[in-house]
Image: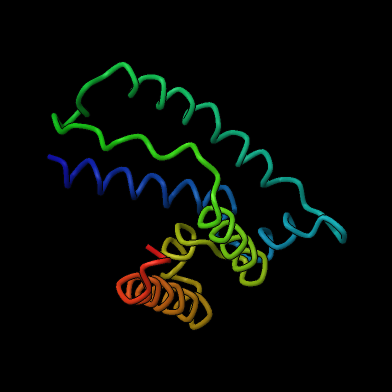
Length: 141
């Protein structure tokens, strides 16, 4: 059951990214170009995501187990540290330069061609590289 719920949720998420324009790199870069020809349309997409997520967090806080009967993972840390800031800067820089972030890049793999595939491969290499570095450099863990 969990696999079906995960697949349906992923498909719905991917469809939402496609319909909202989040997989269009030019639209994303236009949204991030505050000093140039700014395109505010994705602000409505991002803003529209806040209400359902806030509701989901409130509902989840009242439950002990998920719909599938499994316990919820622990709440993420509320602290702001160097890892969070560094990751945010890297994420934002990559998003602005490539026009992709992880979810939309995977959703766009079917039509984005070599540039989308290159981004996903580079993203996976970065994830594996960080995992490798964390095992060898305790300060990164």
